[in-house]
Length: 336
Image (tube, rainbow, N blue to C red):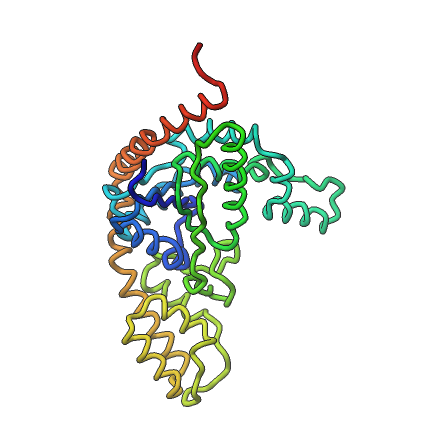
């Protein structure tokens, strides 16, 4: 019986995270992990990354970079279970069992699969499944295994992942109905939309849009990127409205209450865009500098990263093993 709420967070391993990831996922998850009422599981979803990434070196290096990111931003591996998905083989076995009970029709309704089919249709392909792998199609099953393996109570997700969490609930309910109650039915914890910050072009910050600001970029490059952010044509001396300004939205994610209030007044007084960007560069650089320095120290210590992830995986396997035994027994995979 769990005496704490178990929260499970999956971390994609597709390159070094950007400041949108930092604000929207990394820092909130680290803060949640400090609560005495929660039991936090955080994992590097390296098997999931194979859906889009077929470059072995990138798959390998990204795992180290993402692990170093979380640790350098304040994650305490002694207070959480922090592991690589690939170090817990029970997850893949559970995925097969769940797949044997999951209707194909459920997966047909996955937004990611439907979008890929629609794209093929738009391009006039005679085969609606052209280029679509079973990894993409079965993604919701592996995500369900990630979650159900540890009987998570809460799963923080963005709106784009909400459907997959609902599928996990469907899969768990179907299994429990057929074989008896094995799995906890997880609840979603929808990420605060206020935590989504705009990219350089005004759209949501995303690697797929090429509009990101890397967390660990140096001061010089940070300055160049901030100066690329688009603004309107209001001149210095003309009052500006902060609420619909992308610079101000980013500032709110990194500035103190006093800095935010001071900048709001500067907008109303007509401070020029160049000066506003200079202030923003200084605030972000000051906030990121400790993370950056710690990251560059940790990333050089591969042994520490490997040991940390291995220790986390051992803790994860201790939780996963009895759950998988129960699953095997329930479906009839057991000794004579």
